[in-house]
Amino acid sequence: MIRPTATGTLQRKSQLPIWLSIGWRVTAVLSLVGLAIAVHWFDRAGLRDTYDGKVSFLDVLYFTMISITTTGYGDIAPVSDRARLFDALIVTPIRVFVVLLFIGTAYDFVLKRTWDKWRMALLQRTLTGHIVVAGYGHTGAEAVAELIARGAEPDSIVVVDPDADRIAEAKTLGCLVLEGDATRDQTLSDIHLPTARLMIVTAGRDDTSVLITLSARHLAPDVPISTVVRNEDNELPARAAGATTVINPVSFAGLLLATSSRGGRVTEYLTDLASIHGKVALRERRVTPDEVGKPLSGLSTGTGLRVYRDDTSFGRHQPESSALRAGDTIVEIVATQ
Image (cartoon, rainbow, N blue to C red):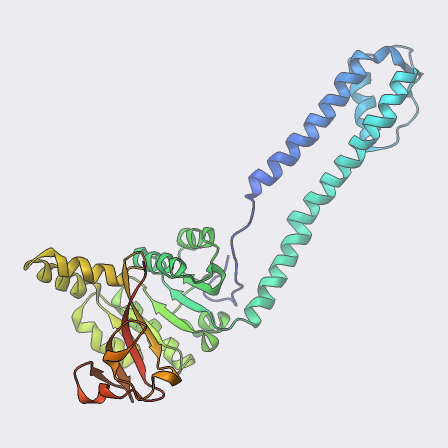
């Protein structure tokens, strides 16, 4: 596995468990050998032993194994037409099939894994436009599940976590994974962070999340970073470390609870907005050329809420939102159902 002190290599989910792959091969070989032994035993009268003239079960076992694995030594040979026909039409294909199984096993567990490792290394060198999730605890897992539900390809998501069990869980979803310490520059370089589309930091500890954010911003000045902190006092350090967006789930939960005290409809609507499975959703996008000059309230794609212009936000009722400009970013509510 990847260690924090070593250069990491990406991994992803295997199509078939190793134990199952080996198991069905062993079962197939034993079944074919058992079939050949059974037929040779019941038709042992068609065999001749040049040593003592008697064909025992041990002789049948020996003859079958030698016939399947080699061309035989000639000490025991089929003499009847039926025995020769069975050896020609059944034992020979079994021999070929067993050899192919062994070759296939060698390919799967040696050549193919070497090929996959090389292919993952090549992918790692050309990795771009991906989403990095640093920390795959409960929050990280929820974020990955939501990203996939929103249409992100699993292999466009790179999960970094020092825990092997969490890495294995992320791998089952089809994500690219790297077991390592995301606070280290080498680990972040291994996943080509500067070419990423987005980084999500959910380390589970505020101090670790802030340190990951600081390391990431140092390596990737232009990559958007969303950082989760649980203590309100750590929101400012997270922003100072370079987080583009700081999310405090505790504060958000408190906001929902306080809102629900005046009725649950607003809380239900906010939850609906946040989830891909809701009837409505929030969307952030750039203003299109045909929308330039139009008011935010006149959008045909949804209900415009805010305009972001030169790092400043304006509500739909402010004068600045009465005429959209090229380069503006808008946040709108759109229907999903």
